[in-house]
Each structure stands twice: as structure tokens, then as C-alpha cells.
Length: 102
Image: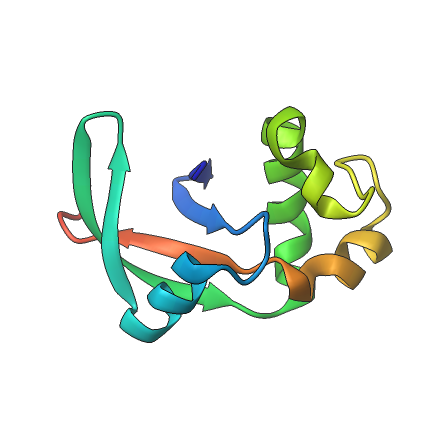
């Protein structure tokens, strides 16, 4: 799991699509995010608008392409918006709110 922060907002992107953790967090709406040794309680809201997800997916691919690029069907950070919009429904994105407010 590679959390992504853009302009102070943290996101979780599911590079492998709808996996077990995605199904679980969709149902629960809450979870724990562990970064290093620190665990934080979170709530999430899923972003479903492909137009909103384009910039998030592009930023995610820019940061993590070497690790997750193979899962994006040949679409990379330099792809046209139309390609990112086309694949967006297959890659869940969640906005994260930390319970401690930090």
C-alpha cells in the first residue's frame, strides 16, 4: 500500500483493482493505515468520477510506476487524459481522513 498525498489530502489507490482490501474498506468505510511503525485510524470515501481520478492516477503513476506500472495495462503517467479516464473505473481511489485529525 502506497499512500499518496496531494495538496494535503491523502489517497489510497488500488493498483491491482478490486481486491480483498478494497471490498473490505468499501463495506466498513473505516480501517487502520500503518506507515512504518505508526498505525492510524482512518475513514475513507471512494472517488467514483473518472475525471476527478485522472490527476490522482497520473500522480500515483509518476510516484510509483516502477513498483505498480505493470498493473495499469500499459498506461503510464505520460498517457493522455483520455487513457487515464478510460482505465479509471478499474482502479479504486479512496480519499482518507485520519481520525486524529492530523
